[in-house]
Length: 181
Image (tube, rainbow, N blue to C red):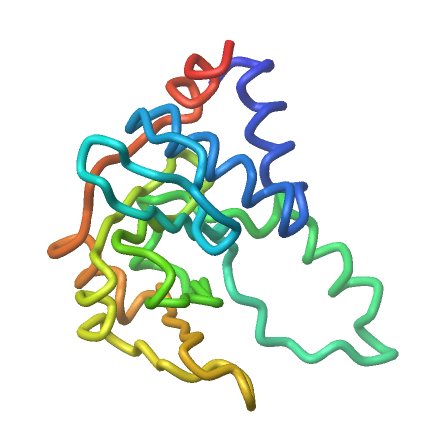
């Protein structure tokens, strides 16, 4: 990975929720030639298949179970640095990680594109709204009062199922960089 692509990748990992989500949405739009959404309840629209598209991605970080205390605060903050925690896809079965795909509103989309930004490449998965119900660990309940809004986790226990059943493609950061340069 050259310096420009590494800086780009590191920038993606530094983005916060909404801005990171926009990167994922633009990536999926460019890869699959989707169009802007027809309303605010889904992310993109597939004019060929006439399907509402929802897009949910997460960055993959090694878990850190250590509790922060007065004695370890400095050490824990140093260890929390993104460069110390990003996980390569080749290590997905070696180190624990937990990525939450949340605010899944099945009634608002036909197809969900979801995935993981690993340190070395991006995993892209796809499932229909109906298939979400059979996703390991899916809960159609996220917070009290949030009816119809669910979530599921991608982690060491579930990643094999997603790779076997819902995997679309790997995308390197070089390929992602080229999509927009």
